[in-house]
Amino acid sequence: MQNTASDITDLLARVALRDRAAFSLLYQRTSAKLFGVALRILKDRTDAEEALQEVYVKIWQRADRYQQSAFSPISWLVAIARNHALDILRARRPMADDIDAALDIADGLPNPEQATVANAERGQIDGCLDQLEADKAEAVRGAYLDGYAYQELAERFDVPLNTMRTWLRRSLLKLKECLSA
Amino acid sequence: MSTEPEIMDGDDISVAEYVLGVLDRNQHVQMAARIAADPVLQAEQVFWESRLSGLDTQFAETPAPAATLSRIEKRLFGAPERVSIWQSLALWRGIALGSVAAAAMVLGLTVMRPAPVTPGPGVQLAASLQADDSNVKFLALYDSSTGNVKLAALSGEAVPDRDFELWIIEGDAAPVSLGVVPVDAPSAVTLTDAQRQTINTGTVFAVTLEPKGGAPEGKPTGPVVAAGAVSVI
Image (cartoon, rainbow over all chains, first blue to last red; front, side, top):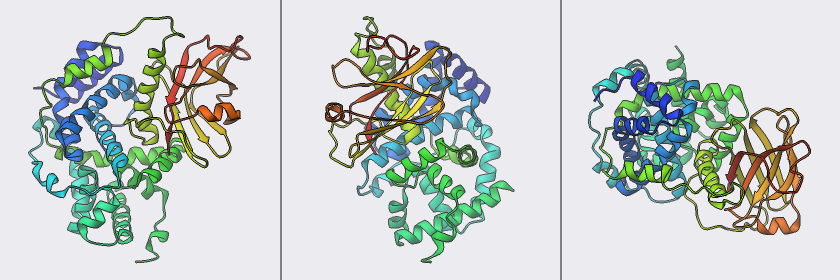
């Protein structure tokens, strides 16, 4: 499987022109990644599968908007999947988070080609997260990768909600300085 | 600790919270609307999205269930109906559903559609209006306590010698005109009591392109340039 950024960009352009074969190919190239995103956040295979269907419906409808974006194509697709999964989570709350289920999802290793694509950004964000205290960095990662909202983060780190909010906002402020450097 | 959040009350950090997804639903929707209206906040959103996307490699690839692609293709391409465009409820509904999916991005609303609920007094409903093949986008906000529909164009341009017309579509009923609306300024329409009774969470707002002054016979004649179903916010 070859997944260079230009391949995916090319497929998105063809999908924007309503090329169904390109859509099928785009799905084959990217669905494992996007299913991984939905599964990590929703932590349920049935929900993740339903979400994945809705995500690809959106991708079909919005492929023409990719050109205007500032992202690598795979980041753009991940953002659609991630935002959709977060919308589903937000609609479900308030609800107890199943932390045990979260532990069942293996983290796995990133795909080497995609790692190359995102290498510069990844190096930067990881470097900047490393400058935060370990638990603060973990909170940012938990929000981004697992979709934890303030309430869940406060429970996981066993601090009051307002403390969590202060922590995270302060961490984001530091991150911004580092990421802007 | 108690006064810190006020000190750090910067919009840039609020956008970061929005992108990270830690806000609750109401805050998220409010932030989405603020970002949609403010290019500075939009730039801030791009900053955070692109920087945080460096974490995307940590999402593990997991093969999707085998039947998923054919389900998606059935949803997108399965057995389209070709009836006269204005008689085709399937089309209106299809537009509405598609727009609801798209609205999720703009408003942070979910695509899950609960059974229609007629709102009590003081309930706010919102709809993001857009359609494929059109760059016209509107945001509609309905306040059930006043019966006011506020409308703002998020994108799109006036068309010479034509007007945009706003419609509400309720269930199987014919579209009801709410009049001609500007694309270059916010506008507001007050619904009649009868119209207010019909508004529920499945109601669709749609904008069509019509001859100057609006559709002559009170029925839509031009293309749907934007449509979306309302949800409680």
